[in-house]
Image (tube, rainbow, N blue to C red):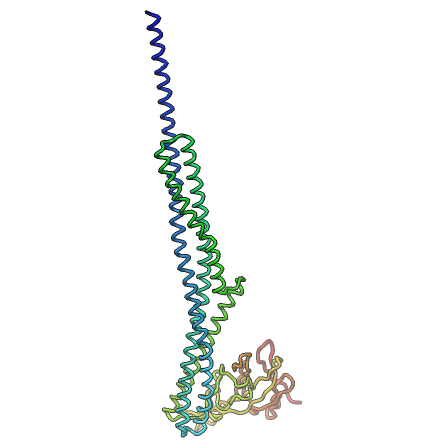
Length: 420
């Protein structure tokens, strides 16, 4: 009886030990299942975040592609309008001819005035169209350059999100495989298998965008036509800016010419047109400039009409008048300059008079624009001379001196010697 009792007691102890061991294993398996579930959740969150970011970036990518197409259409429309606008501006030549007729008539040829104003109006309208077209073209080039940069940046971000999405799917797939190996609750496994299938489907859909993205980026580059070299790309935009500035300058010039003509006609001040620095010289020929009807901005030359200008103050009479002009290449660039004398005279009724000479040096630049090279205000009785080599020479016999002007370090320079 005692032996039997001992045997039963040993069996109970063994059963308790086995039950305890099984309980520990079950607890350990539950902890492992929870860890796998947490890992699966982490991978799932990564997948969801990548899908959201890729979707948002894809919308940005598509919208930016549309903006490039819109800029391109604006540019094409503006370029189609450039030709007619440039042709329309040429009517300014007709305006100038009619204005000359009106001025030569001393203001009597009213039909020429009417024709000139009407031609200026047409030229101004065309110049306005050209200015708007050039502004649109410039803005389109800049807009396409910025948009292309965004498209390329967006494409990189989408590809990066596809890479992160794939990493998340791989991580979730491994976790689900571990759940099956560890015989985790079948219901939990089934739930994550469904999540994995959806994640793979999302990944495949988004990954399918890769070739499409590459194709769209290439199309965008072709449309934008941005040079690969950064320097060349900057030059393209700089050239567009320069064309816009040139068109705007032309518009302002035409408006100013019309305004001057209309004002002078209303005041009965019709006379020869006044030339000035910055004007476009016909045929780039400096000898076609009318120095007797010219606005001398610096010194005391003033604005001459028919070679002179006169005005009175409280106690003196002042006058300026054209004296002489000579042409020669003093600066050695192969093109002739003009050396113009304008005398400034002051007369006092009781005291007498005094005067000085202003020697102006002008040249025509590569764009056929008149520009001033130098000015020298000088007292001399003989304001006429000749070109000798690369010097402009005046012989002043009264003061027994030889005065010469030449260029030194790009500056108009004077020197004088006694006559022998």
